[in-house]
Image (cartoon, rainbow, N blue to C red; front, side, top):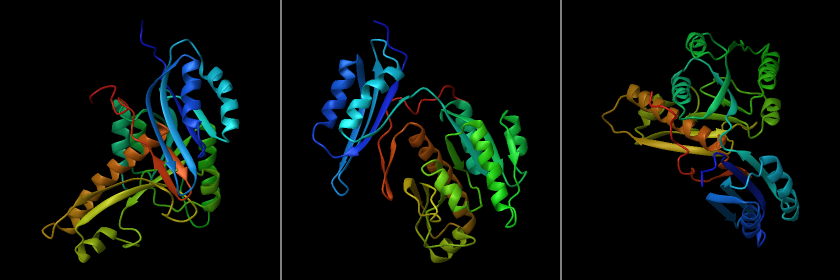
Length: 298
């Protein structure tokens, strides 16, 4: 029997009710679907249940038919449910200012297929990375941002998002604070990266502050953007150990590397539907087997 090429996934978030796992598994089995990967979490503190299932339809059921059929189960368990094609690439807008390490890393991962997304545009308030973006055949949009034109600039950014159909905005070291209105409109659809020193080392030169305090661990945090600056639900974090023998410049270089890795992992988790918002926190399920495979080596 040939192996089905379609790979679908189902995300469910609902009140913690007995029988929901069995209902989902039974529904998929009765509709000719073979589950290849499953993860679930019952949060006792909030009374919420979360589940993500990867599966293959083996009897020709389309995504539309499976969605229609699952509607009754979703209603019965008061569930927020999403059925999607795992092979479909989500449209993403990248935003960057003058630090290019995260942008360059994401472009490389995108180019080799390690990050299966469709980058539909790059927005910047500077021209530093126009050439590299255009050389990748990606539209580059320069939108200058000042205190006086901030609302007009954001309106132009959102126009680009709407016209391209982008499902996610990634702030790849975009050094402008987004307005409350934009954060609310794109809630759960903007991912940011910053050094893990916040809130301990705020303001300019956080790595220099950390160096002067003799910290032994530096790192990065990727999170969803909310109206509360740098306090959105955390998706991914990582640290790297440093010693007294390293300089402030070493801290910056090590920080660049860990920021790039953490941002890429956060995007990977989001586009594969592995992240669930749970109040001020997130539930992040492990990646499915094979989801990190690249289409080519370089």
